[in-house]
Length: 599
Image 1 (cartoon, rainbow, N blue to C red):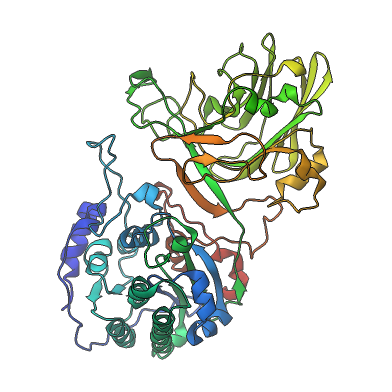
Image 2: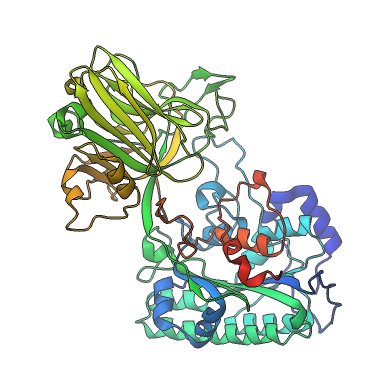
């Protein structure tokens, strides 16, 4: 039975995102009815999308099995077996990430109700909702028909309720049969398909190619995919259609379970197939980032137009104070000092109505350092933001202080930052700042180098006691050096993913902080330097593509993630995404337009 489209469209337009949580009727397969095909575009081709999720496939395990039809598709695909699903790997949260284009940290959908979780610290605030891709398509291009065939009724009746027609199947074979049938008889612009037997096999025996049930389930579903691909190519108007086929998984698994944020649970595969694509495996090194959220300790602090109730404590990382952290004092390193890291600054969105809300215009927000307070008096050093494009390198000997402003700070994108400090004489220090390995600023300041020391701990994030504590940023690969790196050495380390054993520079690293351990400790990966203790109500970590300015422009270095799906589909259908949707997925298929766009 078909849906009444007029009624549904009116409801969708009236209530928008709320339709994610509205139930609808389960529909049986329709009778065979042939519909008229769309008119061809100017180049004679109509773009279409087939999205297939084989739930529960670990990417690296799929590579080991390498079933027949998948191997054939790779000949005309951009693909990766190291794709990342969301860090929250429940079934509903990962499907929501794929279909909304944002990660769990934003959509907050954790179960099959597809209702966002309220913030426990602000239970009466409205939780932001994110519309599914089919809802967006139905409102922007209502003539484009969408179809869904799934095992989970919550996908058809809640998450993807905006589809023109939906079908719930009891078995993967029934999913295949239904999909083949309407590809033969219907005219979909977007088709979403869910297989689930691999997931069930992983729960039964384990998510490993070494487990017979798991490997056999992958091969069986691969056979279904082959039949669906045949149905696509047998369509009567196939010669005038340009299909993007996306084959992926919602999440992986570890042992016999999933739901956590381990690499095996997040590791899936992704295949973007088109008959004109040249085969290319997309791979990128990964880095582990920790998000540092600012915080005001005064729960009734008035700033700008509002009185801020801070709620949960922000995130920071702190070393012990005293002698154990002395190596991170600039004045205790006679050969100079260098600080470098990779960072991504977010807009200040924690407190609506506060000064600088929803902007990158950040004034005097601490980033990291070794200083008692964000002031002009206490001895030590720190980095802090200045305006919307600068980072201040601030040094104080307890009597005098100076600051060098380094421009060209990047916002909302990863960049590499480095600052070098060198003693010129007893009253003069040379500071140089680099962005993406390129010198941005070089300036002398009047400070006594040997006295730039503090008994305070080394910190990353906000400083206590502090002012202006709302900075929100991600940081990775923080390295501190007991020498002043030259311009050539800064350029080298900005591109450095890891140290070679024989690299002479390795001996000058006094702190290298890469990832947080499960007990909230951030250890020096080279075994030196103090341990940093991470605090905050719920520190957020994420695996992201390792940033290096030296790899920009290499079309094979792409870290595919599950929230990228939304962006690729819109791009393929030649629809425009909107800034206010706050999509997180990257667009990468446009890198290869020379292969499929005809002159």
